[in-house]
Image (cartoon, rainbow, N blue to C red):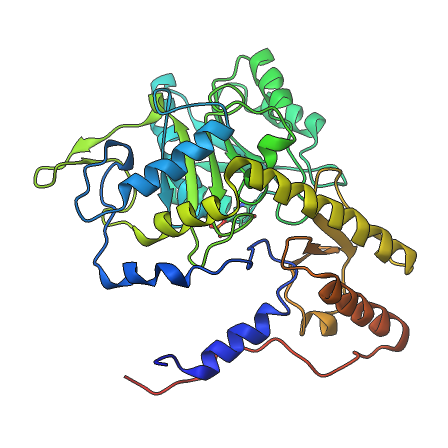
Length: 381
Ligand SMILES: *Cc1c(COP(=O)(O)O)cnc(C)c1O
């Protein structure tokens, strides 16, 4: 074994405490280890299959799998697997900004206060103003406040960064309401859907069509599906993309990165296949939902204030004490702490977390001394 065992032990230890963040951990993909012996590069457009040392055929299948889920195809849409949802969303907002230049007015980004922090960086990088709109109690954008904000910006073009599944509550912004408000104010708009986590199961509960309900979408490969390497699958209406022929390779430069990760597409392809494709993902979602509802009841019955959005597999607790969160890995934001009923959250882990929360509430101390571990220094190179 070449790996430093301390490092593997830490991963193993923390994996047991990783109950709140959205990445799934129920995969075993080491049988694909052979690909680590090649210099793989997915430079260029995946859809045209021109990469001789790439895995474009896998990337194309994964992208087209999501196109099918969102009722579109390669004739009207395009996409690639970016390094993360942040890059995917950056790409789409950048294309939107370029397209909106034709309206010859200022373009601004509008997002809810519950949108992911990535939008702040994206607005900064592409140099657009960002307007935050306050939300309803569940985290979804407040449509009256949205209308007021859009009324003030009615002589500008708007990129609406819609959150379809917020990290904290899984709340969903109403893209149809946005469209009606913007149309009534004669605003030129573009809608990007940030569906990093919920994007893996939203097609089973909502009737979304890409290019109709929104112009582009990002879905993280490492969240609902699960993969050892992070990624962000993006889909965008073809009318927004532009590419340049690369002089010295038989492909088109149409992505943010030049050299691109070609390992992840193979892993994602394999994992989606293992999970049983569209049907398997649907079953996976409904079994998570059932568990989320069951866990919610258990928590309420033990005297805690816990709630969730109807479709969500994310449970919202009143902010959990910091000493509990020195052990368990879950996001805490403002007045909430959330955990996610993914396959990784077993009944046993959930009970153990609940026991800690209740023990701290009633006695001010934890049930044990277990803590999250952080990296320690290793031999210098
Ligand atoms: C995780 C997440 C992101 C960012 O994804 P990265 O892959 O970490 O860049 C964006 N939006 C939402 C709603 C998320 O949950």
